[in-house]
Length: 457
Ligand SMILES: *Cc1c(COP(=O)(O)O)cnc(C)c1O
Image (cartoon, rainbow, N blue to C red; front, side):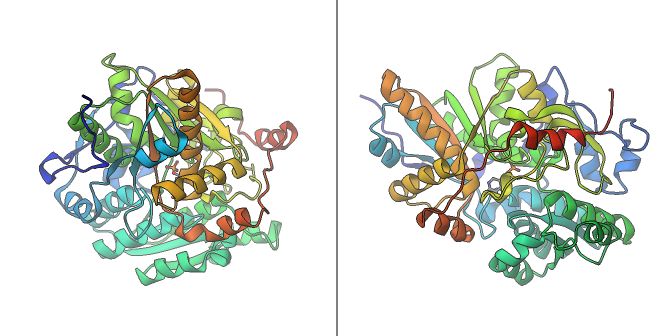
């Protein structure tokens, strides 16, 4: 008789990961280095440390060390909201009448409502340890700003958040959560920076973008004594911290004696997916096991499925290092889409390299289909998912339906990155039948590609 898998699998404190895993150590083709936009030479630790904390620079540049000890203080903080449960989606399986077995890892069980706290606390910890006064950052939809505010409050650091103006106005509650945790929140573009003033002059009335908010936050960090800049995704250090998601999942799967066949995650800047798949990808790279990995992105911002693999600017103001990644160009402005966390123009250089090496697959999905999946999931599994996470749900359901046709009993595992409580305007649009599905044309994309820097490396 088949052993009954529990609805939720948690880890004991003694089973919790004590180290993060750096998947780059097992990659044959390493991700391309960050380049200095002036000299086009690889960024040195010295150059990077003007922007980032020293310990995080070390993590960013380290392609070879497989494991990093998680400092005791961070382990303590993790205990407040981790482990996150590995859930067997029995109710969804039943609703779909599929022979597939579906599991998800839910990262929304903390006030910030997403996985972003996993890296926020690490970055705040290293800033504090370095004796810094504070950090600056940007936030789009607000999840990263919220997570960082929580982490900074805990560590006793100042936190300055540049919030994309349209979100600042449309998501007042996110803003108030950040302020409650003591953060200083400025709508971007703003008059407080040179780059903000320049952008406002060129585009009066603009409602801002992530790339522009990054430029402002970097300028403030590099021109204010005792401050550094921190970023919530894309960078290799962030994927390292997010490996906690995959490591916990792997231990939980081993505990119940299950091996997933397909692992699915939404991809914005790539940190949650990178973290989720890291230990499994490590096994695949070392030839110990095989898995299918699927990155899911919005059809409105298709960096992997329709982007170019090239060096690009990470921000609109072009003050950040150049990164080689699948990108739509730093000037690409995605159409209005409710998955704010998936609107970045580029993709983590680790995931980009893995994708280029055909070790992961990518697919894009349209917004209305994503919300149909979100609604279906919410009604049977009880959790109201974030629009970003629902991209993964969409593809997990599609895969499960394929199993129904073929009769295969595949084990499907996806990352449920967060809750949708702050996204009710999006749900309202969906419920009112007013959601649109704009997909950029090749001409739209050509505009973004035209702005790629001319780097022949
Ligand atoms: C930010 C965010 C994402 C995107 O994560 P990346 O790691 O940048 O791909 C996905 N889901 C939720 C809920 C988020 O807040």
